[in-house]
Image (cartoon, rainbow, N blue to C red; front, side, top):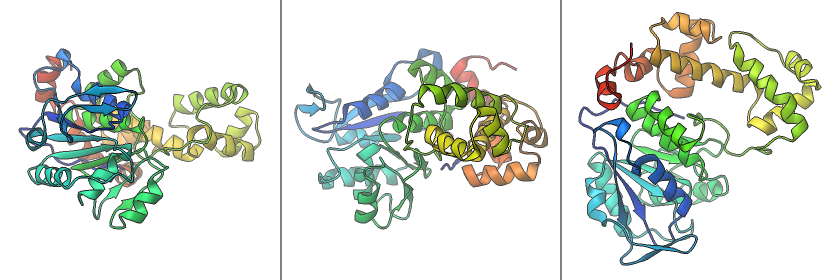
Length: 342
């Protein structure tokens, strides 16, 4: 669920995370890991990070931690990106001062990003009205009922509405942060950060956030793992459900049930996402024509690639290449990584 707005020529790299009494420790840690660590390999254009206190004095975090912050709402006013790492609870009121600070910062061009229950802070500010958003699957019904002006997407990892971004449960915040890094600096930077975090470099926002069996039973893993490897090894190959079932030693009905339980989607949808992921990588890093990319990814034609790309990412392959390709961003890449490899 992604849009790719045109980047600013002089982006404000200050990322400010809100801190509050009752702080969600994991969600805050995600923001720190993604944006708050020193990364000299990224160059001088990398993010700066600060923490803005919502409450006065010493605050508490989940797990018994007590802390103070760098500053208050004056940091929010200076920020280019503001992160709301969870909230005290979906029934906890959001102070008017917080809403006003977020509204003012957004009006000045700041991006707002929420992790998990932090969406209720953005919702209270009115900045999600007439926009799409998501949150942890436990909270989606409450969000719908309390804020009917928001289009709530319950089955995705994150939603990017350009200047307002929301993620599902806690770990999905990692995916959204990596997505924003990718949006700002490209795939190479996002992959480097993901490697430091020891997580997969990218999970598409449209993937299901709730999987019945996130870790397959051993006997299923032994059959589904090699099957996924085979499907990914040659994305140009077409597979029928019957063929996949035979390869896995299951009936077609059993395969579909266990595949969705393990991955959160169907074989056809999973294969399409792998093809689109490869297409994005090739658009960013290769000089292949869009027609050749469509062929090598198993999407067949430029028209087919364009259709699925627009449907999944709300942009065209050509526009995506112009935004993210190494050629288009060579000067930016030079400043981050040193001389660009050709």
